Length: 185
Image (cartoon, rainbow, N blue to C red; front, side, top):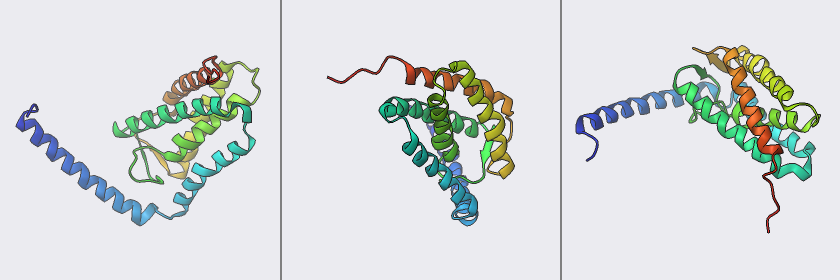
């Protein structure tokens, strides 16, 4: 074995404790969250924005726009999981108890908000749009979910999210508007 036995034993012990803690978390989720009004609200927030976007999207740009949305989803769920694991914040009403991130926010609200900002007023500077997007996400969205009790900031300030959202928006924007899309031959 490449890993020393003492290290492997410690890792195994910690893993067993994590499994026990996860099981307790899942039990609480099934008892208090699953099928509650908060759970249904999360399900609605995960589905309805996509349906509305699908109906009103700029159809000829669907693939281009989705590449930006998938980038936003990937980076958001990664950073959200990372922050939750480090104890910066916690979620109380996840639609799925198996992810340390807030699915409606990461996989629906953030990407759809990004898509709306990209599609509306295409001649406005991407920096202005990025600042507006970051302001909306950091100072409207996050406090709203904290007020509802879905999200609890432990060692995080909404101000920290602001520059992160600007950077994420700008990268997504340049993915969507870049000249990287060619016709397949």
